[in-house]
Image (cartoon, rainbow, N blue to C red; front, side):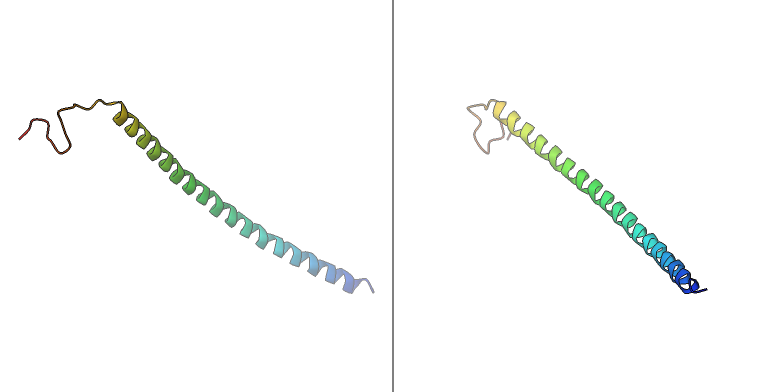
Length: 81
């Protein structure tokens, strides 16, 4: 029976390895979920930023295209009193 201590140590080692793998896999799953949430939030924010900058480009282009009335100066109301 000299193999019995080796077999017991082997079983204990396998049990500890399984326990460690389970803990690591849980940690990896948590990290993946946090990463996915961060990517979604970043994607939303960058999409909003892209939309705002596009709207600003359109507004500037519209302002450049509009013709100004020569008689209406800055601060005038356009005939209203």
